[in-house]
Amino acid sequence: MSFASPHPDVTIPDSSVYDYLFGGIEEADLDRPALVDTKPEKATTTYRDLIARVDAFAGALADRGIAVGDVVGLLSPNSSAFAIAFHGILRSGATATTINALFTPNDIAKQLTDAKASMLVTVSVLADGAKAAVEQLGLAKDRLIILDGEGEAASGHPNAADLLGPNHPAPDVSFDPSTHIAVLPYSSGTTANPKGVMLTHRNLVSNVCQIRPLQGMQADDVILAVLPFFHIYGMTVLLNAALHARASLVIMPRFDLPEFLDNIATEKCTYGFIAPPVAVALAKHPLVEKYDLSSLHTVMSGAAPLDAELGHAVEKRIGCRMVQGYGMSELSPVSHVIPFDGGKAIAGHDAELSSSGWTVPNAESKLVDPATGEEIPLPSDGLSETGELWFKGPNVMKGYLNNDAATAETIDADGFLHTGDLAQVDPTGCVFIVDRLKELIKYKGYQVPPAELEALLLSHPQIADAAVIGVTDTESGEEVPKAFVVKQPDAEISADEVMAFVADKVAPYKKVRQVEFIEAVPKSAAGKILRKDLRTKA
Image (cartoon, rainbow, N blue to C red):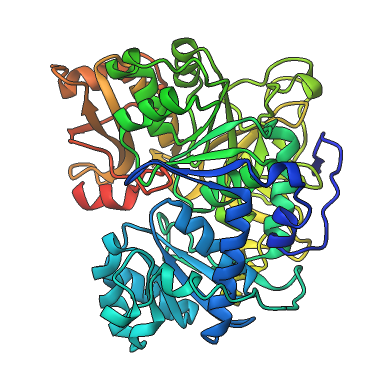
């Protein structure tokens, strides 16, 4: 049986992203700081300026022939310029396909080709890769916009001044928000080839509506924005939700621990959104002690499972509340989250930090046994059996671009999206993610979740980071768990000691059988472990 969200339904307006975020803004909010760039120098953009620049950007795109149905690529680190370009693209009626700032020219060209993009917006630091990609596609020079570049007269590539200077009025566009594609991010590709995820304006609006009451974000909050805006987590949970709350975003183009800590202390950030690797640093790095982080009242972790012990270590060290959420690009992205009150309004007590919280409003979930296809009921106490998590709600993607087969495999006839993640649920409907269905290690017929072993390894004081994958043992031919371990500075722990540490705390079939020490665990910009990269090392 499915279990509905315990939260009251929210009203979801039938509007575009632009109209939802900015259409009803009050005069008193227009001069609030919306975006605060920290690099290359501090600069503040008010809501009034932001809206004016978004409108002008949309007008410039329309003047250059971009219209409803066109696709524009956006390749940029976090900045106010990203936010203006992103919402300008959506305001023009076009679709934004956001591109990972770490992509190679071939990766960029592949995404632009698949998305059928007719223009690319980027910045100077990424211009070489963008130029190479655009040349592969055969696009004219003026179809590559370099926002901080020399300008169209000098280089042939328009810059922000070329676009915003004429102050073209935003176009009068018309489309159905429930079907028109707003953004086209690409799935991470950690388990398969990346696919274009078609998210409509209604998908994005719905998800902000769903999470806003659960975040508790207020207009006087100062939000640290280090998660990449090009990733759906940063796009929805940070950029769009914070703008809707009229909060201020303190923007970092990339993660750097000293700068991260300094920005919290200097800008008095109140709310942080991170991935688990940042939690590791907050819990363990000695540099944290040198900064006053007392302004932080809440830190939310997402993009990968957060170990409860690690989360509580962050809470104790900083004096904030840690919460966790779950989602995926195909869900716009949030489907489950621990609310800002910890869950007291629902369960009467704080949710366990090892959980991902409850189903968001206007939605329902179910667990299905992947072997039998049988639905797993809510337990009367304790945790349920493990099953694949399915989800249904207005934030579920329209489908995969030009891939009906993959769409049909992921979204069933009843509208449930099959996440590919294994989970358990408690009697209140609180969900605990166990692991990726496709990432489970099978040792002698037993299923071994890598995330469980990774959390255990991170509890060791001499281990700074860790990742676990399944590898084939050359002698037995069986799949065995292998740990890739990053030592703490000056640590002298051996491979045998790592294996013994794990063996003392897990069932025999879950033992780590191989250990390799590495300098850093490869991760995506969203903080997910790139297991495919580790497999090339194994």
